[in-house]
Amino acid sequence: MPTNFIVGLSSFESGWFDNHNVALNNLWGLTQGGGNNIHFSSIQAGNNYFVSNVGPFIQGAQTQAAFFKGLQAEGYNSVNPNYYPTLANRINNIQSWGQACGVTF
Image 1 (cartoon, rainbow, N blue to C red):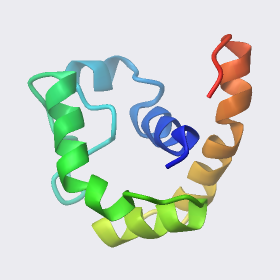
Image 2 (image 1 turned 180 degrees about the vertical axis):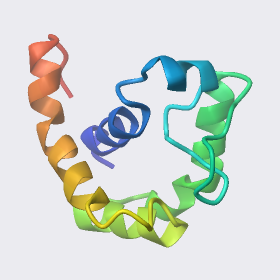
Image 3 (image 1 turned 135 degrees about the horizontal axis):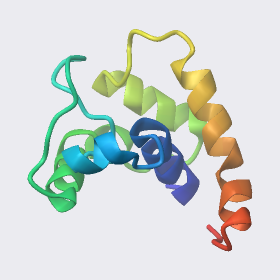
C-alpha cells in the first residue's frame, strides 16, 4: 500500500497528532462505534489495534478507491458525507507536506 495513504489517514484523523490525540495515544481517530475516541495505553497499543481491526479491510490496497472501499467496509466515518473527498485531498497533498518538511515518501 502506498505510504501516503497511511500517513494521510493518520495526519487527517489525529490532527497531525495534536495534543488531544497525543494524550489518547490515538493516531487513527479510532472510536467505539462513532462515539468518543478510544484511549490507548501507548501509541504501539493504538497501532496494534488499527492493524488488527482496520488492517484486514485495507490490506493490499493500491489505489485510493480500494483504500477508501476498505475503510468504508470497516465502518470508518460513515456519517460525514465530505469525509472521503477531504481525506483524498489530504492524501494527495502528503508528498507536498513531506517535501516542505524535508521528508520523502
